[in-house]
Every structure is written in C-alpha cells, then in structure tokens.
Length: 109
Image (cartoon, rainbow, N blue to C red; front, side, top):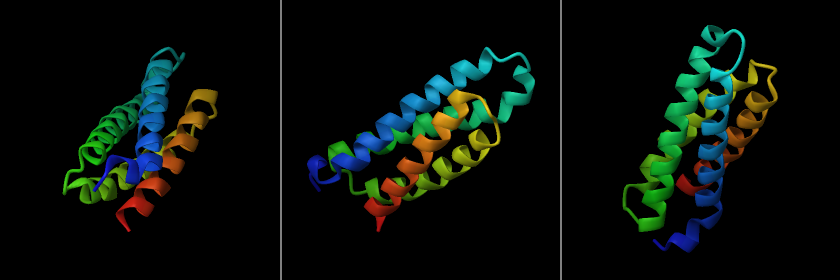
C-alpha cells in the first residue's frame, strides 16, 4: 500500500486533526468552559486518532484499514458533539470531522 494511494484520506485526517486541536483550544477559552468538556474530550481523541491513522497510511501499515474504520467512528462522534454548539470553531470542526469520516470510510471499504 503506497502512501500516495491514500493521499486524500491522509490530507483529510491531517486537516481534521488540526481543526480538532483548534476547536479544543478555543473551547477552553469559552465563557462556560464546563459545558464544553465533552467537546474538548472528543476533539482531543479525534485529533489523536486522525494523526495516527495518517501515519499508518503514510507508512503503508497493514493495520491502516482497521484504524481508519475506528477513526471514522470517532470522527462521527466528534462531529455530532461539535455540531451541537453554535461556536464557529465547533461548526468548522464538525465539518472537518464529517469530511474525514467519509474519507476514512472510503479508504476502509
């Protein structure tokens, strides 16, 4: 498996991880930060799994497909949570998570 074979998915994972990191940091600055706790947790989980999936695909790991299936599930959960909040950073994160989840599902198909 060549890393160029999954370049679109790698790019989506990296963009999603960046959006999740930004969202988590921005959530920490919100007035009611306690209400953002689950969003922050999922942002962190999603960023980590996206970076790991990207690395597995780039290295041609035989486990990349399995990891992308899990990545899609976590991206879906993060998109759902971020989508509940009206902050621009949450909405942007939700969009990036949806794009990544779809890319991961295509990769793993």
